[in-house]
Length: 183
Image (cartoon, rainbow, N blue to C red):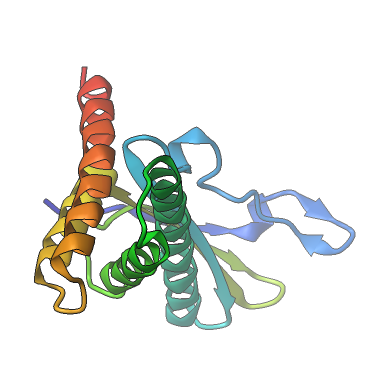
């Protein structure tokens, strides 16, 4: 299911002004646009005299932020898990896990959803500013990572078992948060 977000184009003339010129009140702020127990989320901003370039910059920025969220979260999860277990190959498993995260983030993700896009035009500078927000469900991302771990030839069986155990524990948390969020 693909969500289609409306694009709003607003002239900056209607926004507040300061001595430095027009000021944009940035959209996509607050809890609804931050990562939580159910979703990884990222927002981006891009500016250019051409609206398609501004949109491209915002798109890249939002996806980079989303990727950073996933990478940071998964690194913390792996580090915490490996610290709690006595695993003689902990550093090797952590490296493989991080490699898996990078591999997954470089893949087109089917469940990546745009949750907002707004475009502003500044009459004075002739510049467009575009804001974009994306999200992906954590449980979908984790299931995809588990699938990738099963097919990655660089991960041996013992590493795969450890990675799958880490992912299964996080999947349980994400599924529980998803069920609570749907009530």
